[in-house]
Structure formats: C-alpha cells, structure tokens
Length: 81
View 1 (spheres, one colour):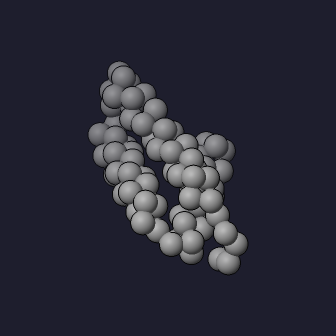
View 2 (tube, one colour):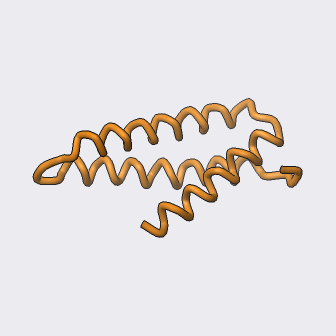
View 3 (tube, one colour):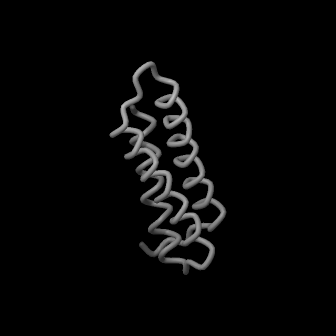
C-alpha cells in the first residue's frame, strides 16, 4: 500500500476496535452464563490490539498503512455484527 496514512488516524482505528472488544468482554462477564471460550477469544483480540497499538509507536509509513487498512476492515466487520 503506497498511500500515506497518518499514524494518529491508524491509532484511532485500533482504539475503536479495542473499545469494541473491551465492551464485549464486559457484556460477556455480566451474562448469566458467561461463554468462557468467547471471553478468551475476546481477550486475545484485545491483546492483539494492544500489541498493534504499541507497534504503531515505531512503525514506518508502510506498516502504519497496513495496520490502518487491517483495522478499518476489522471495524467495518464488527460494525455489521
């Protein structure tokens, strides 16, 4: 991907997805019978978001663009759920 993506915009996308996972974790924990497999998967996704957010700190333009594209698609996918 050759287009330049603002690192702050990429970070915002990662944050939006992180927030979605955090909210789902809270909902799952509050469920009458929490689904432990789903809870584990949500926590793993949230940890991946945190790792990508950390990676953005030192990422070059190509990596920033790749992360932004991945999270834009991810946010769109989550929005349709």
